[in-house]
Image 1: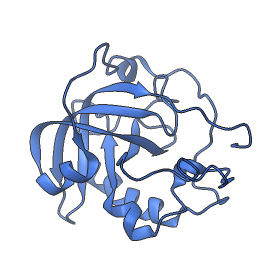
Image 2: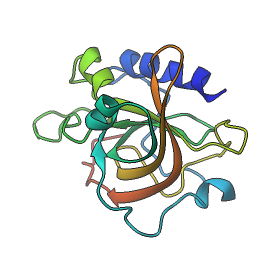
Image 3: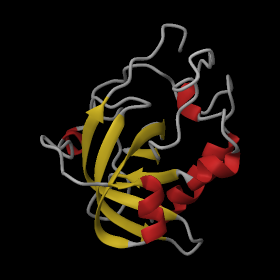
Image 4: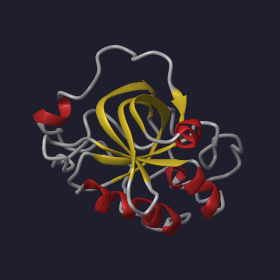
Amino acid sequence: MTRKLSFLFPLALSLAACGGTSGTEMITPAKASPDVVARVLAADPGAAASVKNAKEDGPQDRVVVHGRICSTVKGLAAFTLMDTALPYCGETNKEDKCKTPWDYCCEKPETRTANALNVELCDADGRPLATPALPDLRLLDEVKVVGKLTKDEHGNLALTAEGVFRVARPEIPDYVR
């Protein structure tokens, strides 16, 4: 079930550190699978909850959540969404020359966990869709995700996405890898 995968996201997020490897690269990936491309929304889904507010509200059958992509799962349509109220490394402090700003290493692990939400685009059986890439989405992209917010037996929240809309893509300095 997808909850097994969801359990790993907070662990991976808490292990990320500045300059370290978190299994993510700041590159434009290969083409996404057709099943995943079909989940891209052509229009803004409207009002959205922040990641933090969605987590506070708890499980919901239909929710729209607004955040930034901060990590992805290689080979799957799954990623971690970070609350936009939490600035990524170097967003507000331009002197910070962090080469991996999407890992939020400038924040304490508990702050990252409190502001993060796992997102999975799943098939009819509830398994994350296999894909070589996300459809024109990159780390630090600001997105709105429409889906169902659930809680597993370990208390972890996960958003099973029906659709994703890219709101904005930040300008990334040249020194970022």
